[in-house]
Structure formats: structure tokens, C-alpha cells
Image 1 (tube, rainbow, N blue to C red):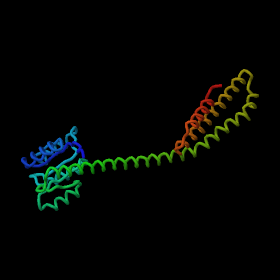
Image 2 (spheres, one colour; image 1 turned 180 degrees about the vertical axis):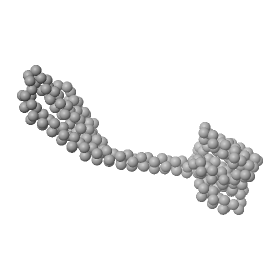
Image 3 (tube, rainbow, N blue to C red; image 1 turned 120 degrees about the horizontal axis):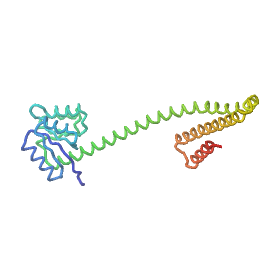
Image 4 (tube, rainbow, N blue to C red; image 1 turned 30 degrees about the vertical axis):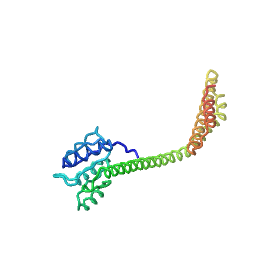
Length: 247
């Protein structure tokens, strides 16, 4: 199985141990390894915005700031890089505490060999990738849910206002048909034709608006039902365009 090359932050105050492990990881797996000689130095590396680490390997027992302290800081800063704790014999309580703080795994230093560490690193990276993918999918589903909620609200509003608007536009046309000509009889001749043309223009605009509202509502319903057909969309488009053309 081909092992992916990763950038690893190795945190350990034991210079000899850190240099040996870093060298083995570079030679055996071609990983890029950055060594921090203390938890404070590790913090400095992690605070750099242009530096990305795939995995953090940290010793527990270090002066001033322990591996647990570093892990707590990583958790507080919401740094997503997975952590593997390196512990000594008899520190099972530390290992449990590390796992509670979000460490992916732990390895006892007295049992450490490069093959076992390579397996742990690979497994940790795979688990982290799975968690990231799962989180992205959960966020996507949340967004879909929110979009559906918004879509439902828009649909309800459109269904509520469309009939009222179309009814109002139809009433305008009806009133113009019934009353318009009677009103024109009482208008002096120089203005009669101008008023007729104005009323006809209002009728055309009302018909155009009514057709547009009906077309938009129909289009929305098709899209909402997830079965919109191109031919039907084109028909609605042509109908709206025809009604909108000036006579």
C-alpha cells in the first residue's frame, strides 16, 4: 500500500529521540518532518498562518508546558490538525486524558518502532480525512435543509399573492372594457382618441403582467417539483414575450 507523504510536527524536548524519529520518518516514508524542541516552539509553528501540518506527534512529559497542555491549547484554538500523544510507561491515565481532549491516538515511547509509528500515522490521517469529509457532508445537508425551508416559505408567499394579483389585473381589464368606452363619450373630441389609446395601453400592460405572474409561478412550481422540462420552460418564455410585445 502506497503511503501518502505528510507534513508532520514532532514535538519532543529529547533532542536525540526527536532527531532519530524524524530521520526515520523521512527516510522510510518520505514524510516532511518539522521538529519542535518544546511545546512553546510547537505553538509558534502552529500559529504561523502559512504553515500546514497533517499530523502532530507530541511527547507528554516536557518542562514548562506538557503535551497535555499543548493539546488543551490546540483544542481551545480550534486547530483541526490531528494529534498523537507519545507517552512513557505507566502513564495510561495521561493517555486517557489525552484522548478525552481530542487526541486521535497514543503511542508508548518504549514500544516505538518506525513501522508501528508509520501505521499509526497513516491510520490517524485516514480517520481525520473521514471526519473532515463527514463534517463537510453534514454542513452540506444542513445548508440543503435551510434552503428547502426558505424555498417552502417563498412558495407559500407566491401561492398566496399570485391569485390576488392576477385577480386584480383581470378586474382592471374588465373595468376598462365596461367603463372605458362610456367614459370616452363624455370626453371632448380632441382628447377622446388619446384616452382610448391610453386605456388600450393599460390593458396590454395588465395582460402582460398577468401572463408574467402566471408564467413565473408555473416555472417556480416546476423547479420546486424537480421535474422542469425544457420545452415547457420555452413555452412559458414565448408566452411572456408575446404578451410583452408592443402592439
